[in-house]
View (cartoon, rainbow, N blue to C red):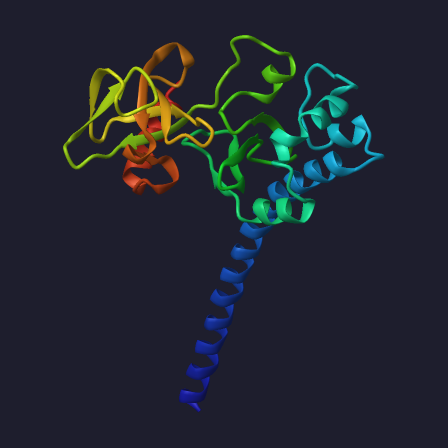
Length: 242
């Protein structure tokens, strides 16, 4: 009888922890799906012929309240969709890379539409879930492109320099034969901007465009989401100290 009671208690404990783990996974999945569904809804609006600004405002933050924004976005459809189908985009959204880039607020999604074109979305981390900024494949801010700004803002991602030689060359142009401006030690935290399909990216010493240093080959940068937890924790301290 004593053995039977032990077996029953063990079964109850197993069920408790199993249900708890399932519940936790379900909560995580629901949180992720909320962001995923916001992106899917955004793209559905781009393909819709009867979508309204009110529909767009439910998933896309527009501080200027521009009622003509949806029409402007549709003019940028090739840059946002790579001329692929909605079904293909849905798959790309499902396979998107998600990271907070070491920031306390905000979540970034890299949606790779083709081997040569990726669109980046900056979203609210918590609810309500909506898109705050969209960055095109070349790293430029969509909002600035819509306004035809001559000096658009660029998306700055964060990572660490990796090189078996212990340092990497910083060049003054996006090519191997370009002049070397300086070097950067392996392990250095660096901010960089996507450069379309080119393997060379602009690098910055701070998370602001004013600190432009030059160009580094993308293979020499370990992105934030692939860094070890200790390195990620150090970057979080740097980026959230204010």
